[in-house]
Length: 150
Image (tube, rainbow, N blue to C red; front, side, top):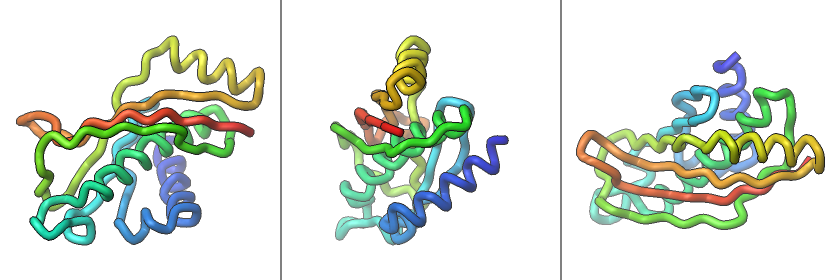
């Protein structure tokens, strides 16, 4: 079930967010709660041959958006998803040839409330964290607040 939903997410992003195609953002994995997505450095680099901050922000924002998409999809639901607020911290320059952003674990009570609100009101909200990291630590830390309505 995971692979068709990831393909559906990739198709949706390409259609609804053309910037994701230009940035060459691709889905990597979904574990039922945490989404990972990647992009290459080359089309997303700055003049210092590190990742452009706007591209890193966009990648993390898309991971959060995609997480909400996947959470709804696994329940056979869909909605209009938008980011309401986002904060990002750039801790180290990113120079990896492939950049991977991974969603952080969502608190089970927060997730249950997200589904409960969506089921009862047709709209909901959820805060989602994401990071870009390697064995030596975090490059980028992101937190986004997403809203969805049917």
